[in-house]
Image (cartoon, rainbow, N blue to C red; front, side):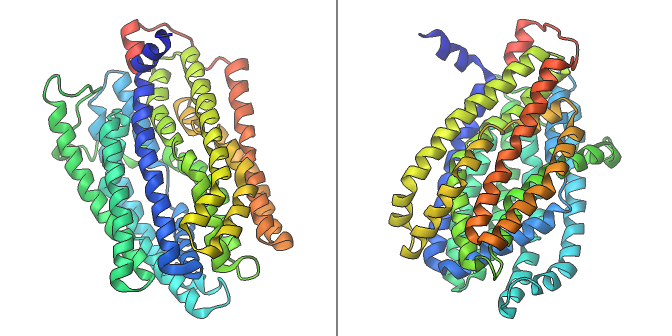
Amino acid sequence: MTLIPKRLLNSRFVRDAFTLQVAAGITSIGNFISTMALAFLLGAELQGLFYVAMAWYSLFYLLGNVGLTSVAVSQIAKGIGAGRPGEIAGWLAFLLKASTGLSVLMFGLAWFLLPPIAVYYGNDPEQARMLGEWAVLLCLLPIIEVPRVVATAAFQGSRKMLYLAQLENAIEVGRVFLILSLIIITGTAKGAIWGTLAAGVLGSGLAIALYVRARKVSQVSGTDVVSAPLPSIREIFGAMGSVPLRKGLPMGIRVGFMRNLDALVLDSAPVLIMGMAGIGGPAGAAYFRIAQRLLRLPLMLLQGVSRTAVPAFSELAVLKDASRLRSLFYKASLGGGVLISIGIGATVLALPWIVGKFYPSDYAGPVTMFSYLLCAGFMSTAFSGVFESFYLATNKVHIALRIGMVLALPMLACIYFGGIFFGPTGVALGLTIALSTGIAHHIYIYRYFTKSKPFAVTRPSADSGDARA
């Protein structure tokens, strides 16, 4: 009876994942509070317009966003696993210069492209103008958040999950407070945009402060259990030339394209299609997005597992321990999937009461209907939380890209034509079908582990193995 809890408590993977699970739970509460407050402050039309602007920003930024953070985290973890902690500064410097350059480039393109693109969306010229202006302003956010991105990669790659959790919780609390405060202060929906940008400034400031604190604590023997010390900010800037862009960008582009395909098909595109005048309009987009957000609350708990898996899988790949990698992958996938599916089921059952109690009366019917239609699709994604970590650790990102590219157009067509022929219901059903296609990745990964020999299995010492898993 007592052996199982001891084994779990002695697993660093479980401890790190639990820390991030708690942080994700607090973030989930913040998301719920913000959607509820926006519903009362803005109403369905303006709230939907804000969500559509966010979707336009996300859709545009996905075109230039690459998986730089995931690559940096993976390489930092591999360097630590191989006994080369000096690589941390080089990869953080790579992330700093690459993120800054791409963010500035994408903002410049957004300034010229997004306003005229938004003109062709919807039937209301004033709404189109607002969409273009808001989306351009939101494209400042990646520039503002570069320090936060670098600090996040440092904490995650070196598995300092407590600092990562503290940072993200503080940012979420600040984001909710600033968005709601600036809506009230300005008296307009645009306050939500200014609040989002202000939250980005706050997050970067907190990230720098926490990074400095984490580095000081790790230098005091016995006060922090760490894998490797963090480099100073001066050391990061001094390592700008140690990892050239050509070394990390190709992998980053592949990882980013893999992730962006999913984000485009499963997140941005459905909201934009739902918000079209002939399908659901801005109000329909608001109801649909809220249903997604509420069903995503349990899924956010997967962040603890997936983000812990990136460094953990990478270290096992360096150790060439295929059997433990396979075991950890299935434990993380099945364990996380079952728990999150139970959470989604409970959310769907409680959702009519939640929406009726905490949202305006006109939200209850549409949001509840969308949640019923999306439930099965979201449950299927509960078992997909560590796909990216597996592909990164095994250097098989190109396989994930092939699967994503083959599935992308059929999934988009299913969502779009579902909306054209069946209206808002068709968009939701199309998204459910799209969410269920993750089974293709499971099939490949199963075949990878059972019919191939990824690397020679070795048996590292108990000290090195148990400490890292």
